[in-house]
Amino acid sequence: MKKILPFFAIALFLVGCNQKKEVKLIPTENFAKEVDGKLVSLYTLHNGFLTMQVTNYGGRVVALWMPDRRGSFDDIVLGYNTIDKYLDNDGERYLGAVVGRCANRIANGTFTLNGVEYHTAKNEGGNTLHGGLIGADKRVWDVVSVNDSAIRLHTLFADGEDGFPGNLDVTMSYTLTRDNQLQVRYSATTDATTLCNFSHHSFFNLKGEGNGTILDHYLQINSRYMTTIDNQLLTDGKFSGVKNTPFDFREKHTIGERINEADEQLQKAKGYDHNWIIDKSNPKAYTWCATLTEPKSGRGMQLWSDQVGLQFYSGNFFDGKSKGKCGKALAYREGLALEPQFFPNAINHESLAPMPILDAGEEYHQISIFKFEVLPNEKK
Image (cartoon, rainbow, N blue to C red; front, top):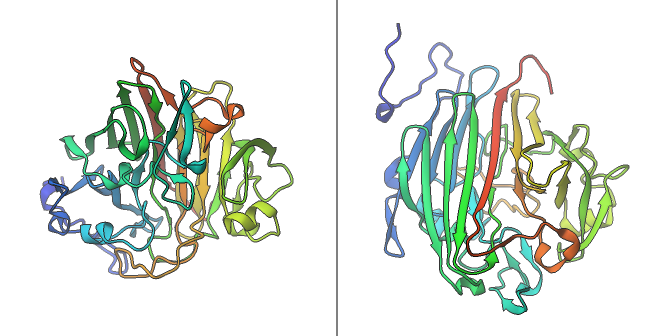
């Protein structure tokens, strides 16, 4: 029998083929820092197939290594290799992070609950995006527990923070399972009616970070309808069928196949940055949402969730000015996000029910699972 090295001594060399890439862990000291009076660190999880590094700053997935069909490993999420790059960041803010307390956009930073109008911090023009100035991504979460394959984090959003009502108590976890799933779970309670809508915001490139475009990835989305948007990328309360449009991913298509078609909504978003309505008979049902594959590497990822909507963003605003963990530029359309959530701006449109409202005495729960596999041959 082969001797298995203890986890804390992981080297993870791939023996027998010098051309195969190995897992290269980010040193934990790169994230050892006090931020807002709390300690930040970096934690490494593994299950024998996936190796993931997570920081409690923003609950971020910093790195996620998986093999291709040759057994060569790549880091398939975009991120930075030091905490300082996340703190002093002039590029994409939400790399790998938890987003909330209300994911996506709130029009004009304004909504009404129980007859009271609230005004939230505007951080995207005149709108609120992903919770405002101090969202879930900009706080140091408390580490409740951690082991070789799972980490549990906790934070408290204070009443009035970024303009939202209610003290919102949130716990989340990442778990790598033996069957190669990354399970993301959230739970929350509040002492006053508030908005509660969390999502995971990793940017994926199944070729590996810095290894080129995501336009030749194949994507399939379990959706016949989507919410339509205005010129600020805000949902307008209406729905549209995807049939005979560039948004129809009911059968798999490469992302780049139709992304530049002269569609009015595509022009507004500079690519895909839209919300799909997941096909399900019960709004609370746990359902397959999407499948992403990269034909050359053979890497595949399925997304399952209990959420009603899926935001697909194709990395249209990466400009190459920031460099990722591998030292290569995070360039235009070289990463994509698949974000399960309530419908964007739903609180301002009754037609977009169910609403992302949590009342005192109720509990919010969400589960999203990313299932990874290596496909044999050249199956796409």
